[in-house]
Image (cartoon, rainbow over all chains, first blue to last red; front, side):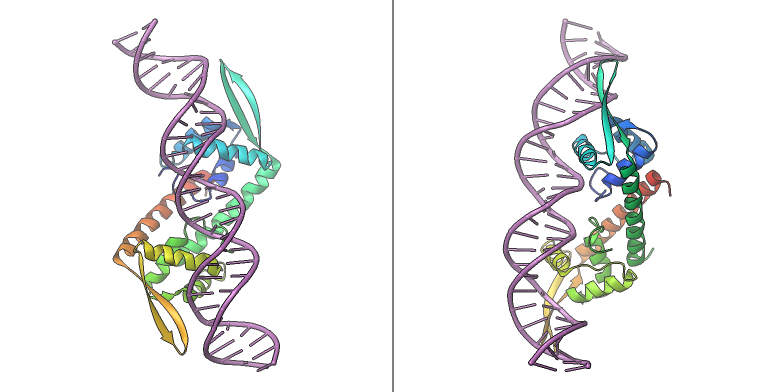
Length: 105
Length: 105
DNA sequence: GACTATATGTAGTCCGTCTACATAACAAGT
DNA sequence: ACTTGTTATGTAGACGGACTACATATAGTC
């Protein structure tokens, strides 16, 4: 599965990843690839704009760091982000119930 | 849950409903409301354009009928639609696994 | 006669996600 | 030195799904 098919769950996936600890964009992409058992492989053009959107919304905070010449923008989830994650998880669970009911299993 | 939150699953929901038997737009809306335990309440502005899109794609076929002065456009799922439904169900299951893995339950 | 439910549809908008591209430093191999 | 692959961040432009609000019309009920 490439980025097609995440259907509005992108923010929730990113926030859930950041809840495990702060990370920069590229690390989020690889973390999601690993946690999903190689099923998710998000393109940078999807993740980086999403992080900026989340930062504008106050759900994550970003800061620049240096690591042996490489600049990284490291993001951490905020309190608002944790709230948003809970909401995202809830609406995901509701969707899951509805889909299960309609699809039958 | 209103239509927010179905996130790309609209076609799958409609096709799954039509698999149980042909139906017109309004009946699809009420069927989804009932099957979802009143959680789903899709606006007509979401469902009717979706049905036309599905018809253009060849996933459903529609025909006009009359029932005591009321005109209805009754849709049936096609063979292509059944294939599309299987694909939709598969990608849904994949998404569900990924979300479960990342969210941790 | 008024209101609710049934029934279909359009117009215009918003925004998430995509593809493709641009940039750059470090690491390893030849 | 050169090339290739990995790490790393980002923009531009486009597409399309879903939304809100509106328009229309019949049937049934109070």
